[in-house]
Length: 201
Image (cartoon, rainbow, N blue to C red; front, top):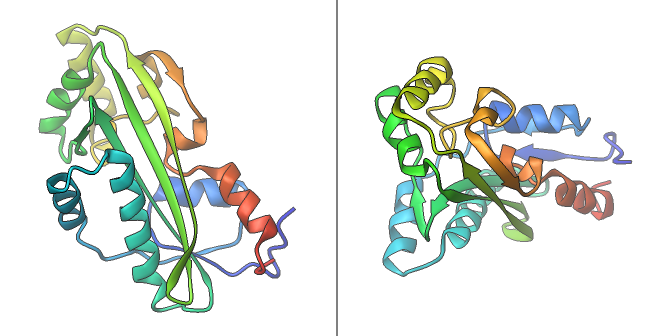
């Protein structure tokens, strides 16, 4: 078990989902959002031809290092998730107006969610991990997609895939191959393994 009395963890995010996962696992933490420009990293990596998984890891690194500057001796956890199809990153819908087109693009296909975590301490990354989950959507009719958009609404516009698997989004999928925690955006088991062995506990 992780000794919360000795653990000093900073989550470089205000994500409600990630906070809920850490709280549910009884991991003590303090949340501090990372104010970074993700578009710069995504544009740079795309121009260099980096794979989506590298982008997810670079974003996690950047978040961890940014917040770690304010808590240098503590463990700072950065995390990011990207949705990609045939090697191309599919950005978050961002609005209900774009949610239909987002789901339509993934409709009937298998896409990948890559979730990455990075832990920084004293100005350097001391742990990295990333994992992929493969998700295959049903061939949905336009009416089914519209119904989903109307029911899911603003709750999922900032989700990497445009859905929450723990909610109505699960009805979109014919097959899922991968860790549940990876799909939720925080590979929890590798994180716990690291925290159990770190000097912080």
